[in-house]
Image (cartoon, rainbow, N blue to C red):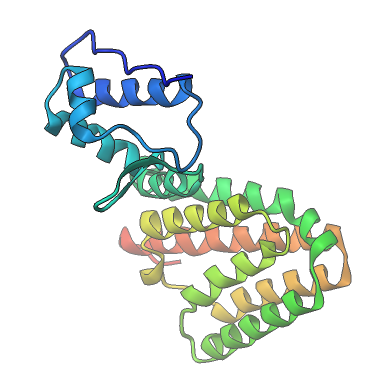
Amino acid sequence: MGLKSIKPLSRAPLLHVSVQESLRAYIDENGLQAGAPLPPEGDLAHQLGVSRNSVREGIKALESVGVLESRRGVGVFVKAFSFEPLLENLAYGLGGALKQIEEVIVIRRTLEVGLIDKTLKAIGPEDIRELREVLERMRIHAERNEAFVEEDKLFHTLLFRCQKNETLVRLIEVFWMAFYKASNFVNLENTDPMQTWRDHKAIVDAVEAGNLGDARGHLDRHYEGIARVIEYNKISSAGGRV
């Protein structure tokens, strides 16, 4: 049974958008799976009744969201589904859309506090060991009154890695990037880095002990600490001191 043909476009405005819609419909109607090839660019342009340039723009747009992939010298193919392009675009958009950094904190806080129970069920000795190693690096920085941005990011990733939920791990990274972008976190002045280290240590102690109430409580209080750091910097930047 032959493949159904691509339907000609019925409207002219925003041709590359119309091309995308038509290509999506072609993929859906023919049940094309990952790795299936699309017709050559020239054939697509002829069937759609548009220029090859419009076809290229449509294909590039679908590549950017992970629907298609171009293989140089071979052709264009349907790409296996992945959340990665969606999450990358989400990270890019959130930094500009969430004007108030408090909004990012609420999302991160809710996500992590709400899912820490699954970590207690899945975490193993190797995960705890790696978290302890990161904690030690945090402590060294804190004693020198230095920031530990990368260690902080790694800590939160490791805390949920054991759940083997790649989408969750990427979402944590996405909201970290949005937080980092919206708050300019690397330049925030933390007046008590040792307390920040103690907050992280308390979380690991509770997780290792299997104490869900303490784990949630310490994680929640950790975000209260972040909020205090941001509030301190807002007051400072406005010309006042706390």
